[in-house]
Length: 145
Image 1 (cartoon, rainbow, N blue to C red):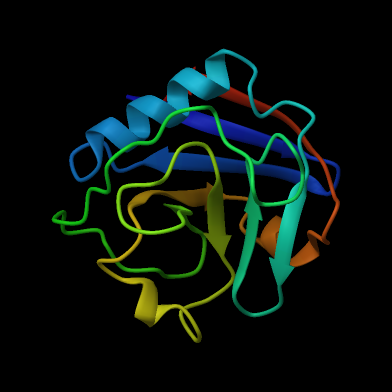
Image 2 (image 1 turned 180 degrees about the vertical axis):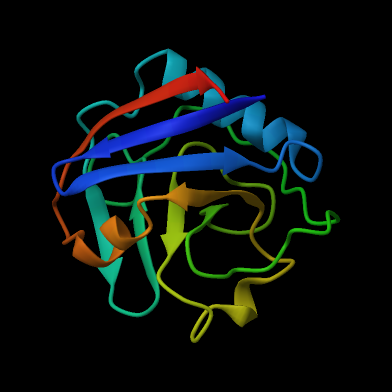
């Protein structure tokens, strides 16, 4: 089973994927990561006690990879808890490369079954709290878990 190592200028997060619940979303994230798509991008949206969001090549929240993927909302792990990775989108089935990581469950329950949860930070979740808008996603590596 593969996992992701997200290296930021504030530290490293190790992510375990929910392949059973969101296989196409996980495959898309892995492909983009292996292609180096995320390397050097920034966290363009940071809302305290909500989420940090990255994956926009323009750094504005308006960009993507040039295609969209469908939402996968039927799995058991569709709860936006602390450390969860989920796909950002501009409406159902419009995700592509932008993803967010949740600070906590406090302000995220309304996202359940609306945004595809595809993984969770297993180590280094405290890094989420240190990320500021504009901080770097230095590299995302996919490794065997």
